[in-house]
Image 1 (tube, rainbow, N blue to C red):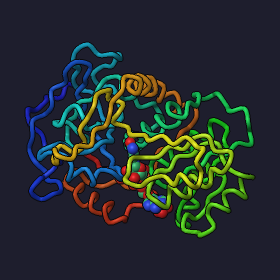
Image 2 (image 1 turned 60 degrees about the horizontal axis):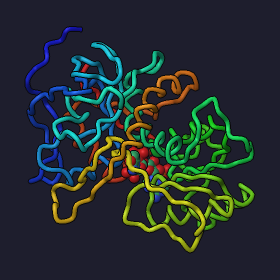
Image 3 (image 1 turned 120 degrees about the vertical axis):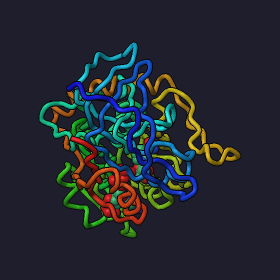
Length: 358
Ligand SMILES: NC(=O)c1ccc[n+]([C@@H]2O[C@H](COP(=O)([O-])OP(=O)(O)OC[C@H]3O[C@@H](n4cnc5c(N)ncnc54)[C@H](OP(=O)(O)O)[C@@H]3O)[C@@H](O)[C@H]2O)c1
């Protein structure tokens, strides 16, 4: 490829004054130990992205999901990668604030990205990022499932995905099916066909007053495992209630909502946050130092994630994991509008993907 690497680039960064983002000229990050420099071809948007705009310091490069081409290698790479390799993954806030996917170039750790398997379009690869990493962390690490081709022993066991039309939900349906579960999902009626097309065996409207009873009737008394991708008061109530007496473990995401212990006191509840795979403690709210939100990184999370990313091309290629439906938009200039649409709740069942370069 041999493209010349510029000293500066355009990037969408946090704008403290506007309490939002702005497009600025910033330095191109330099890859250090175990890092590679990637020319971003497509970046994708996550539900959490707009929320971060009022948490990080001014000038922090935004964006997680990416797919692109390696154009420079740092030192001491843990995984053998080379110039021109096509890779994808999630650029996570925590170690470097000068690198993110809403930019022309980013740096990533060699063992926390994956090579895009042939057959997966690069714009589709960009949708895996944060959602795929989180689903792997929940299912294979926190819930201790085994990688395919392993199947669970009990073919009648159910797995619950609450918020199934989210990016996270659409990936989780697929890997729970691969493990042999029957998958019960909760979504809006306009998303029923979508979640079924990703493999859901059954879908319940989460706004139905008798949603929990419908789940218990269908499953014959409950499910083994669940992920609540929304983790608000109602979703936690419905997910924990639907696990019934059979429930072993439910994962949730961080939120102020408390799980209703009175509904299902025996299930184990585990909170998952992807940034812990960086292996270091991170202050997620540096803009408000008096009320820090510390995400604890752990070596075990990092070790799991490195193994999962190396396994990812094989899981995608051998088991036909489908990307999220994409809504492809223009370049960095389109991101502020896309973030606003997500903030306004106008993104459902599709991933906003931005074409950054060729
Ligand atoms: N902890 C972590 O590391 C981590 C990582 C990734 C994501 N997350 C969180 O996971 C959630 C999903 O993220 P994403 O990027 O996958 O989302 P997304 O694809 O942007 O989610 C949009 C979907 O959310 C669904 N939804 C909204 N409110 C809902 C509710 N009350 N009940 C059920 N479904 C609801 C909508 O479904 P319908 O249109 O069908 O109603 C819509 O399709 C976000 O809250 C995000 O912050 C956390």
